Image 1 (cartoon, rainbow, N blue to C red):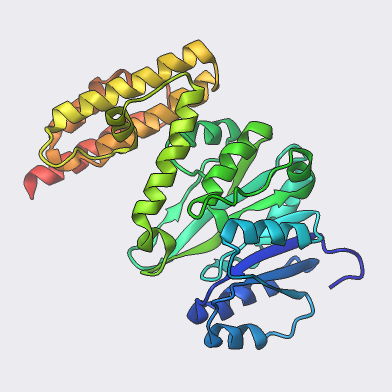
Image 2 (image 1 turned 30 degrees about the vertical axis):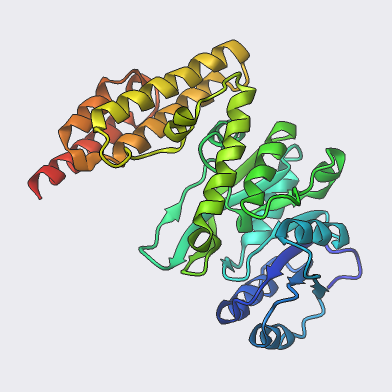
Length: 342
């Protein structure tokens, strides 16, 4: 490590994951950008196998921070940020792999865009299931709107600007044992632009022990609460049924798809009208994200055949001036026809 303070502090929480840990730590130590420190936040419950992997590294840039049993993940992350020394703070997870140029790309981006407080990237999934590239949004206003429906940033791909976290007194909420990142993005997006680099800079592992696989109900309940707060800022006070509609891509068991799509369309229209009154979001970005949501809803129900395609193109959302919507129309038509032929 250079004698000067490290430019980038990478914070990597560890709770077991011994089979992936060597590759994860190695991917940070082998970055093309060298002026870093790597803070390992080691859980009090970490097993011997993981500790052996950690101790096999002798790189002087590694700092070990041992968490107490009382420290949940967000509290540990806050401690890591406080004890770090970098101008920029990057997140990493113990089961993922950073591309060798990740930190260099993100530092260069942050140096060119002094107003940006958080930058993530596209990620490629590895592990369980078919691999795909998550092409996260890059326009900060689009991301801010998209938080109504999705987290919009992949946590272990992100880098923070320390000065803006300190300026706005932002840290993880210690009461969030799940999706602490989602809550963080919502609060950050109010204070400064958050964005993503449109390059794959992280391999994001999905496996049976992933948090979203093992804590599905807890994750769902917390995300619903976050989205409810965002809707309330729009001046909406959704009923329980409307919250189900807001968070659903598929009809409930036994529900007719026509009825489901009608409810979804009415709810999305209600969001647009609420924004006209409150002006919380830029109209162009809201229109784009509402279109994307409508496409996702209809796309999730192509198994119902051409009736869904007709609903898609007949909706006023389809006529929002979005590049590529004609191609979306063709793709959905093909999917619906294929379903009819199977």
